[in-house]
Amino acid sequence: MLDLSAPTAFAMSAADGMHLIMPRTLLPAAMAPVQPMTGRILAQDSAMAIFIRGILEALSEAALRLSPGEVIALGSSVPDLLASCLGPAGEPPSVGARGDLGRRLRRHIEENLHRSDLTPSRLTHDLRVSRSQLYRQFESSGGVEAYIRRRRLRRCLLTLCDSRHADRRIGDIAYEMGFSDEAHFSRLFRRAFGVSPRGARAAVRQDGIDLGGLFRPSADGASFGDWLTALDTN
Image (cartoon, rainbow, N blue to C red; front, top):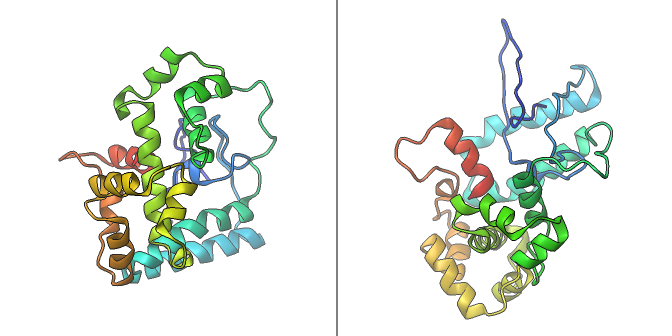
């Protein structure tokens, strides 16, 4: 397991490689702390290494056959499964360890999207940063409130399209993610994704929604690095 936020040098010869890349915010803090980690190696004949290799091989073989709904279901469960296999990342970070401010802020936001009081004032209080520090971290994202709103909308989209939540009311999903008005939520959702919440749920059941667009960089000629960044910010 490699942390792509930290410089790493490694070499391979006469071998095939398989990579699974995911944002650290999808993993528990004990496994993916905000501080850059050193690489972790599992012995190839260990039970967990065999199990993880099987998961990756199965994902690779099934990838082109997965329906949009199946993609969402796996995207919600695979990170938890991997976290169970890999366990904590060595010694837990010390209380005084602060790590990168941007990572700490995004981790905190991701873990508290459901809170109705997730505001700039709350963030400055919880993470003990100034407003200027906070706003500077989200300048390129259109501001901290816009960033939180996008993350909430995206979480709502994934929940709506997940077959495990097919029986839940759209309004309940919106309220759980901090939206206080269902009609306003619906307008924001349509503006962000070009389809209503109800339409997104119906389309994914019919395999009629392109989920790939959620993860592609929007700019023409975007690099692989841009795509990786987009995984954690879309």
